[in-house]
Image (tube, rainbow, N blue to C red):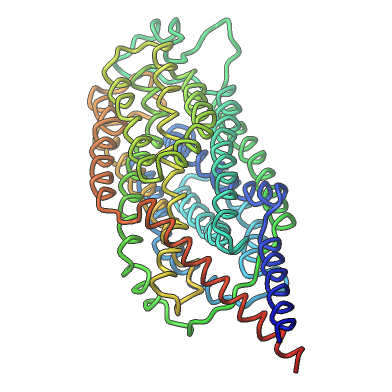
Length: 514
């Protein structure tokens, strides 16, 4: 009997070691998983920074119609994100997994619709319908990519340590994606930036001799609006190619682990009620909504602010690049800060660190060198504000599983609502800001803008984001998952997995003995 017990104990230990080894991710797996996050950030950054100015100055839409396109396109995600999350959670398991087929099948149509967003059709009457249709279509297809990808975090490994490590890789690559999206779109378009048009109050001679507004100059080759249109198409083509390559690397470089769903299937509204009824998740979503809305306002209007208010029409793409470069370099620091002081403290510190620079950039006089310094410093806080809240989401899912051990398989719903609020914030910010510019009297491709436009842009990149950040951080104060609770949940989940493994091992050994 003693020998049998020893054999069973030894077998259980070996089984546990095998289980841990199976859930360990290689460096190649983590990099492949992280690369899958790049398409969302690259396209999102290009759309966030450049779509508004593209619709106004290149497609030359009325600001009112541009605001409708931007808002309706994001509002459409109010339907697609939770719906796709529900459909993904109910999808059958395939030999490739449950999440990966969604990613692979949505990619070809997503890149096609993205490319057509940046194409100016050869007709005027249907322009608004064209951009609205392809913008909504791309949002839907990108949701089919990003919601399963976000939920994939919970399926690449059952070990929280491995998931946290993979998330750190993902954060780094996503910031690199924002840098890449800004660099590709900004530099290609910046080389073909069409000159501004003098308004009724502008002196033509001043515009001709002023490089500040990017006006015409006899010593330089004349760049037409057609050159700018072609530049946008080239940059979108390059981004589409990167999108496809990243999807292929993710599909072949990551193995999705099958998780047995113990809970009974539930309806769409039952799933929403279940996850939104989890207090920590509801609070985290509200925090993310307000802080995302703040930084989306800054992102969506900063290009116009630099070119119109500050007068850096020929340099705004380089200023945006400085912000993203700074954010990329700051990722290792924030990763260290997060592990040293905790996630909640990191979100507070990182988000508040950008507030002084929001104030400085609108209070200081127009100076290109000072703007570069302020923008580079602001990038440190931008990295934390965009990415650190994502690192908190797996902790909420684990907390939910600890409190509801009988209810599993809802990871896609958790992530789909998180993605939805990101896009909703972007749509609201772009819609409100573009509509505000219309009321203020924005002049498309104008060398100068009315004072009302300058004041509106200052409010949109400084005062409004700061107010939203304060609201979001006030909600974060009541967020209940601290480091002690997070470690406790981690320990409880690990004990549950060990008990399940031991039960399976005992059953196997008992069957073999019989």
